[in-house]
Image (cartoon, rainbow, N blue to C red):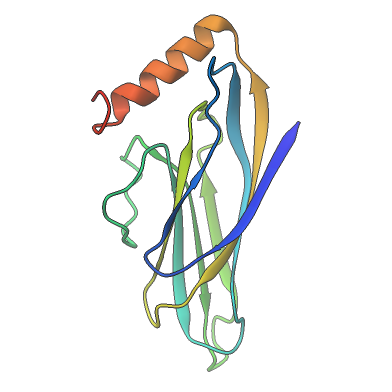
Amino acid sequence: MIKTFRGSLADGEQQVIRLSTKKGKIGYRIKKLQVVTTAPGTNNGEHVIKIFKISQSTINALIDFADGNLLAIALTGDYTAGYQFGWNQHIMFEQEIFNQDIYITHKEGVNALACNYYLELELIDLTDNAAAVSTLRDIRLNPQVGG
């Protein structure tokens, strides 16, 4: 089963996608992440969308694959001069299964423009043990809760 989300993020904004349940027996895996500017072809812009397991205190365009809380990134650019019109790049760590809320951030590097996103998550039934391990791992990785 696939669950979808879509929205728009202002420059420097973070949104939470509510996924946690009381028992945590539903896991999720990112299957698709697509982004597009809110006004293609009309403004110069470079957008970085990132998805994390935990809330981010700083929203920036830096990408660090060593960050264990990073689940996916998407980059898009749009230039009115005509070169590199509408370029996109997406990277998802598809083996990551999570059962808690996730956080999506946006940083635009040129004109502080908004960006749209479309996200598909695959639902995975978790055993009691897998649910406990996933929940404990996510809590341990979150310095605001238990890490």
